[in-house]
Amino acid sequence: MSIDSRRVATLGWLLAALLQAGCSSLTAPERSAEQARVDLPVRWQAESASVVEEQPFFDSLDDLFRHPRLAELLHEAQRANPDLNQLALRLKASGLLLKPVDARRYPALDLAWNKTRSYRDYSHSQAYEFGLNLAWELDLWGKLADQGAAARTEDAALAQDYAAARNALSVVILRTWVEAWSLQASLRNQQQQLEALEQIERIVLDSYRGGGVPLEDLSAVRLEQQSARADLMASTEALARNRRSLHLLLGRMPKATQLVDEAPLPEILMPPRQLPARVLARRPDIQAAFHRLQVLDAQTRASYKALLPSINLSGNLGRSAASGAMSTLFGGAGDGVWSLVGGITQPLFNAGSLRAQAQAAAADAEGGWWAYRKVLLTAVQEVENALAQEQSLSQQLQRLHAAQTQAQRLQQLYEDRYRSGLVDILDLIDARLKLLQTNARLIQAKAARLDNRVLLAQALGFAVEKHDERI
Image (cartoon, rainbow, N blue to C red; front, side, top):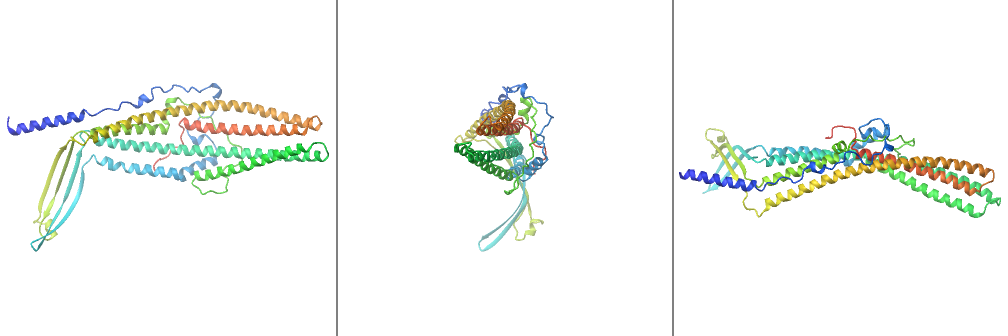
């Protein structure tokens, strides 16, 4: 065997050993996304026949609460909310940053022009160079492809974050709207309570002046009045705070304008329930977590492939001239210059830095699996909680409606008996207050059910009306 053949064989054995050493360090992710969904329930545990209601089918948050004014506010918030616009610009920037990541897989070609001036032995000389420079790392093992896939998947995850933020903004506005209605209804009920107490005070005062009731009865009525006025002031401030919060969500400066009218609140539809698999497939937060799990897997593969040999090519093509005039660079006096260099680089000793980075990436991927698992569990818990709460609130409302009917009958009975002189004035006061307190609890329970239905729709993955997510 000749010396050249021996050198080629030695180089081949060395390259094979390097490849084997690098490939032996590659490890696949230990957990897959399918393993996180293996115990996904087939049906919701909190489902009950008592909760099922016949409602028109809808498939978006826009249809959940059919109110023209609210629909206008939802679209205004999606255009002018500061947080949502910041996230949209991040999404746009992420899409633009994909190009330089993908460009690393292809050759880079640069145009170069150099001028050199030197001084030696009392004489000056200058030279010119003009040409093209080439640089290219061959993606032999797919490391750059994995890095590009990670960047594209992260962009997809950010798009899902944006969709989740849009949905969350709509949900917050819906809940703020329901809260405003509840506060307004409570305010009206408290005003009625205060008016009733003032009316009773006049009756008691006349009876006191005539010696019919003791002073303690008049003091008791006035004590109830002060308590009712304090509640009225607290509700008024809460309504003003609600209004300011709604203006902030819309991207407006705070104003005294009330955005929620005092008309009866339209019924919020009961969201049509879907199978768990479909719900989890369309929730943007779950999709974002799944994409980020894929990102971490791709980054882990790229980190381990960094331990393998890399092949780089570089070269240049141009002309050079050593004369004093730049025109000679493109004339006959210029010389053609070209070069092409190829090389293989295999990491041998770096104090374990690359391997530690790869192992850290694998640990991050394992953590991403648990993060994805937590999002799945949280989604199931949110739906189960909202379904159970819907059942509980429906039963509470049935009993509160029955209590309201009984309180109305009791008030009428005490009014009739009071006119006949069969009961004391304090009994009549107590009957009226019980009716107003029952009305207040009924308002709170109805608002709680409407609020819970908004949360249930969000948990079931209903989104706002579709449109282009990139600005």
